[in-house]
Image (cartoon, rainbow, N blue to C red; front, side, top):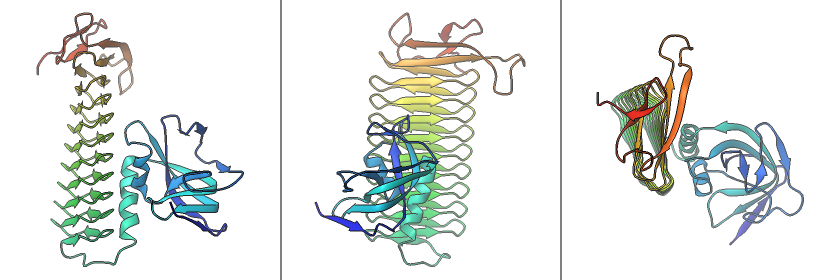
Length: 344
């Protein structure tokens, strides 16, 4: 493995992954703090590590259950010349935490900033290894099929597709759709009725528009839909699906996956081995296969709580025990009992 070292005065912006407790390899980090390594700095060997390309962080911390941050690296820097964009540094400052959507946007900016500009009035297509495509016109389309490529479409009814190994696709227009099928790819659609799909091994899909849908079928993928009546589906191993919209649906079919539906009348399904489903909104329901766990709450509906509803009861159960049947939706009643949900 070849290694390249640079001037100690250089300061770079990078992206770093952590576990749910903001730890990396047992070391505790905190937003706003600066850390300094004593001793040799060597990529993959010693020092504080982060990635220059945002989506490379998924190679070390999967989207599901992890946290990510923008960091500043300085002091001695060491890079792998034949690997990904990982950089080891003597100093590291954790500037701000960043969401999956933020990582996707940063990945597109990373790629487009390294490419030649194109005509914004026409559809864009980039097939080069590290190319980028951008279409900002109404009903425009953008496609990038190269390794680490990025596609962005912000126009009305626009669509963005990136099939490169580490590509990202973002569509923010009304009725837009974003699809990223590459390894470690990510897709984000924030437009009304938008849809995002990521089928890469460690990809993430996020749709925040009304009635949007997000689907991630890759290994360790994550899907999040926060729009009204949105749906999120994650079928990857250890994947996670989250739907926070009203009447939203979240489904996780991967082993050890988690599905969470926090919107009112939402539904959560745990269909993978050792998986779990949680529904925490008003009149929420959850189901799972035999051996899966379900979590339910009952909220105050008489106006005595705040706008979100005071939690009155909370219960957990394991499917297949105590009369809880597989593939059957359950909810909590006003007495805090787990009962079969009515089909409505």
